[in-house]
Image (cartoon, rainbow, N blue to C red; front, side):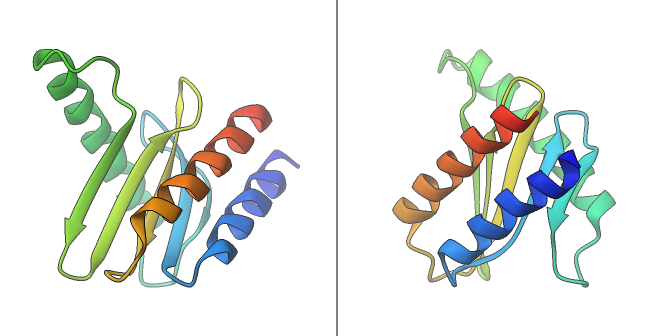
Length: 120
């Protein structure tokens, strides 16, 4: 039931923009709770990489006195990966096209994170 609710939130997020290619709700220890990923993306690998990036981001933010980590943004030639906390033990991971309007993606992701936080 909870997974269905989370997938519904992710489906709504993916539907807000043609620039969003995939999304997932992941525990901070790397377990994928729910996802809407293309078949060429390995759920387990995404969970592990998200956990590693969050850990590194949190350490970096702390060491450089930037406060609590809010987001991790990765820009590559083929698009962006955005990770945002959705509660203390959950993160939402969004994969976008390179043409994505980041302001809108940030806003939609923040809304989805709030919904996920209330479900979990």
